[in-house]
Amino acid sequence: METAITTLLPVMEHFYTIQGEGFHQGRAAYFIRLGGCDVGCVWCDVKDSWDANKHPLMAVATLVEMVSATPAKLVVITGGEPLMHQLDALTHALQSKGFETNIETSGSHPLSGHWNWICLSPKKFKAPLPSILPFANELKVVVFNSSDFDWAEKYAAGVEKDCKLYLQPEWDKAAALMPLLIDYIKANPQWELSLQLHKYIGVE
Image (cartoon, rainbow, N blue to C red; front, side, top):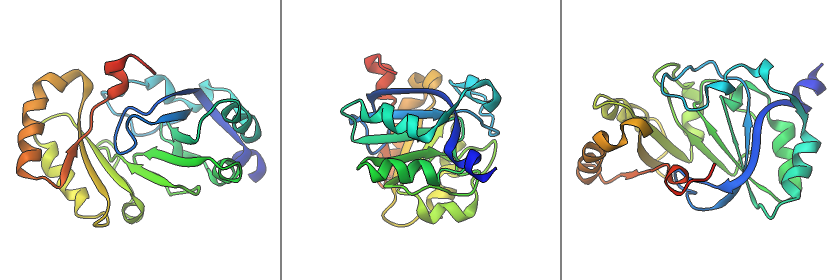
């Protein structure tokens, strides 16, 4: 049973594109979006990912073959909430082929897998586990309203000093929120602005 859990994963979609957010913005990356999420963000733009049972199980070996058929060097595992799944086998297989492995997670489930970069994007709907905070290379907080700045600082206090700190406006409210983010970052320059570049340039 353990083998099936670790080597078969529900995949909503997978594609080669440009990373649009955070520290690795602008880099070519192969995205693997896993099905399953129990966080339930009201503004989620991939709600079809929430039910893992809606998505076909794919073998780790098949995923690695698909990535290998592209010029990709970087693989980003996202969701949904990817840490709902045990990811050791997937990251081992990718890294053994020389791929860099990044994850985008809310941190609401125990950490698994071996990562070159962990982007922690905590959500109010289901808080991250405190144990994941020290492992975050990047803290990316989606700002939905003005109260989110204080909430972001709460998690910034729990990550390591070299963790990159990003504030990102929720896409549908970006125009209204942008002046607030700019003023906040100017007053608190430890933070940087993250934009969803892929939506501006029209790629997945």
